[in-house]
Length: 147
Image 1: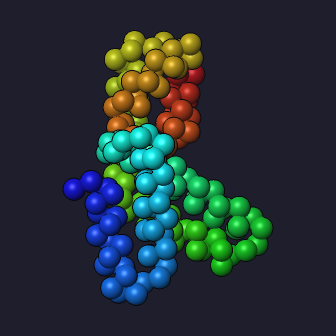
Image 2: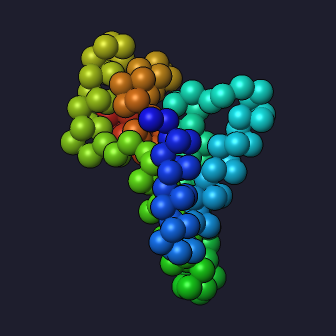
């Protein structure tokens, strides 16, 4: 079952349960996926759906942080709750130990010896991580290992 199909089923369940907060988030995700299909002019692949959901997750996390900094805790909590719903539809993130193993494996595979090889290591590590890690986190770890 694709992410879009799961979202449709969960939207119906949220409607029946009268869970307005969850329903609003699910509708927003459905709209984002539909807009992605319209832009692509075809049905989206699973990877493309995940990219859209990760973008939505990042927006929610950044909004929650901005609201916290502005002293608007209620809005920050709302954004954080939406982010949790989005996470349900994404593969689990890698643990720190798994991520370190992937980076070490990528360095070994590419034969990297310094910072000049960071691009090659990042490419390999990204492929090994299968989009289950944030790029900034991966880049920081690669940078630390190559220095």
